[in-house]
Image 1 (cartoon, rainbow, N blue to C red):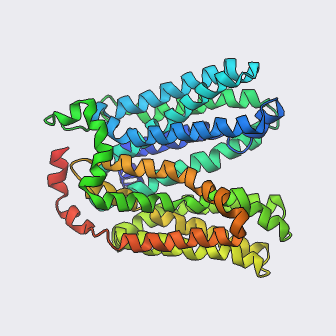
Image 2 (cartoon, rainbow, N blue to C red):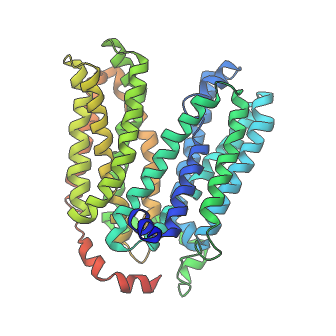
Image 3 (cartoon, rainbow, N blue to C red):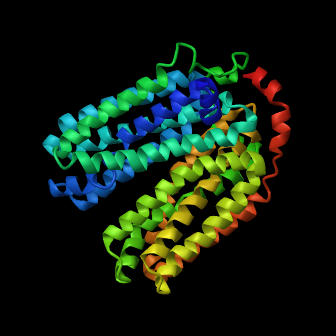
Length: 420
């Protein structure tokens, strides 16, 4: 009975423990988001240096995200995830032992950047493993579960943990406690058995046994142009979600909303997204991966982005604006099947295909706020909103050129499994 429950909800016991491990790991990795920058500024770090610290962190994460897929195929999932875990611990040790106490920016910068390099190796390494371990007919569902656990750890559990512990612990000790969560998540994800998360690379491929395969994450875009299109779509996916916190709180405050109400809406947006990831993943396997991304994700996000701005602007109160925020979070999750589409576009090089996806996810964190910085003063908040909406609609057009019959891959699942 228990095994049937696990297979129905988490697909397999191996994946279940991995999902839980990633969720706990990300709770520790992201518990400082929202308060670390103000804390550092209050303790003597300039605003400019704080911005540079987090920019370098983001660049490091994007770099690591890009190589996570191909490194997984070269060295195996277990090694890559373990490396990410160790890097986080080492980076945290130097950041918390020497960087923050001494207020030395040049110690904080490389040590925090090392933390940025760490989490994509752990989380995205497991995501690559999912593309091999999950059956093709449940690949979209498997991706949905991953992003639900990822979002739950990063945006729900980590933030909630901080909001509670900061009431009775000094911030530096809260940061130290992140190591406990990260190590616990690592143990859960990796201590399944000695063969559960091993290398899925194909030993008969000489190319994959050398570092030259790292270039595959770049050259595969030219070999399979549809991967490039999907990469652009994935960048557009979370643009607005990273841009909203930069300017939307000010817009809402000017309309009479409190910052507390904005934070409640933001939290509800991500909770809805966490739940919807799982639901859209299941629907994607039944309705079709491309249809789900194009209509639920691209068109849905374009419309709800406009609603999130115009509902309060046209006099809508807190509740209807909250509904609009939740609707955007739900539509944002409809991009989940793209995690299934991209590896299936290059079934012989899934790791390289996933590197394109993870790089796109990282670049979205830069371009989202960047659009605000470039255009907010020239065309205002309404102009930025329309840029985001237009990009979502353009993404829907891009998806029309990505033809993939996922039912075809389901029929060939046995042959695909024999390759890996």
